[in-house]
Image (cartoon, rainbow, N blue to C red):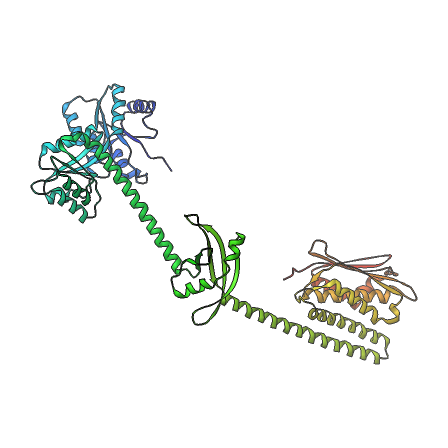
Amino acid sequence: MIDPIEILLVNDNPSDAELTLHVLDGHGLADHIHVVRDGAEALDFIFCTGAYAGRDPQNPKMIVLDLKLPKIDSMEVLRRAKADPRTRAIPIVVFSSSWEDRDVRRARELGAHSYVVKPVDFKNFVEAVRTALAIVVLTVLILEDRPVDAELMVHELRRSGFDPQWARVETEPDFLAHLDPPPDVILADYTTPELDARRALQLLQGRGLNIPFIVVTGAIGEDAAVTLMRLGATDYLLKDRLGRLGPAVKRALMDNQLRREKGRADSELEASEARFHTFMRHSPVLAFVKDDAGRIVYVNNPSEGAQDIVAQLRGYAPVFENGGPSRTVEEVTAAGGQVRQMLSFRFLFNDAAGRRLLGGVSVDITEQKAAERALSQALAAKDVLLRELHHRVKNNLQTISSLLNMQAELLPDLAARRALRDAQRRVHSMALIHEQMYSDRDMNAVDFGEYAKRLTRDVFESFGAAASRVCPRFVLERVFLAMDQMIPCGLILNELVTNSLKHAFPGERTGEILVSLRCADGKTVALGVADNGVGLPPDSDEKAATSLGTRIVEILTRQLGGRLDRDSGSGLSSTVTFTRFSKP
């Protein structure tokens, strides 16, 4: 924000303007000086119009005005500035090369505070500026029937550093007419033929005006003076002691300023308190204050029901004992016998007198608690239904597996029997997943490491004596997978272990099958099956590519969005790598 202008310099001669700026700056008379070049621009600046419509409306402390200006004459600028109540109080120093009495007289009549002639004695110019800056422009209304006495009052005000803009009145209509705009101070004789000081004070009170009112009279009794002071007079003094007028006016202005500031502060405080109390009364939250005995000091809701609820909130003693804040859920009985649950926060504080008090806010959470219970019950019911679903699916798959096994026993063809047993093992791998899903506490994700160990042993058991020569070994981390990944991973593991048991150990060959599961970074899962059997023969690629087991593994790997790596060195190693779904 631009700092307010202290001096407005109006001069169309760049040399004179530069010299004036140098003098003002050199004597420390102003830090912020603005220069305009003609009368039209000066009026725009003074009244915030034209190019200066957006400037800070605060008036400059003083105007230095050259007498001869283009566009609009300086006397017209002076006249308009002094005719407008907004700018009348700005001291104006006229800076001119004219010695003519009519120019000096005209400038004085229009309200100029000083008239300095060029070529100038800059010592006099600086003094004129200093004097103008120190002058306090004062609008004065004088209730006096003697013009000479009014002139004496004005003279005393000038001696005290005021520039009085004054008017003398004698009648009630004239007095009322001069109250708009209100003057800075009123000087009134105690009694005049048509309007006395007592009546003038009554008129001010009737209009709600708080204007410093000083009684200046020739004689007044003590009782009358006390009566006037009670009616609102600021001070009184005798006409033969007018030397006290200047100090009395300064004191009255200062007291009035203090009263205005206090009144403004009181109004702001009252408005703030009204906003606070309105907000607190309409707040759905109960706010309360208690003393160390549990007695209620304040409740924001004045209703009897709210008072009763706060009285039932008992957890104040631990807060006073421990000194720290607390958070509790308490049951209270509301009007009508309803039991409500209240979430309360308590804390300690000191009031203005240093008394230790407990502050608290309490929120009715009965509906939220009821909703939580309903949600918890719904989730529990959902959990029961899901477990029952997994249980029934597992039973159905187990039935299918048993039927396939029985059908395989009846088939005379060895190849057909093996095919049915392979299908039976695949169905069993899926049934085992559903069994683990309804058995685990968390059905959203299951520990695949535990499942892999159990499935591998079941596959070994299904091969009977043929698998007794082979030892399973496990290196399994705890990796939790969602069902969408559990089933394809289970089928892949079933195919890889089955393939090793079928082909890696012909005849009486012994060995081991290693099942591994890793998830080092928490995202990338590596499922591996490695055996130390005979490995793949050199011409086995085309044959392996057409087998059902291989096709199943490749299809399921793509379904997982993963990659299948195989290595046939000393035995066969197959690894499926994929990205784990985040646990819900």
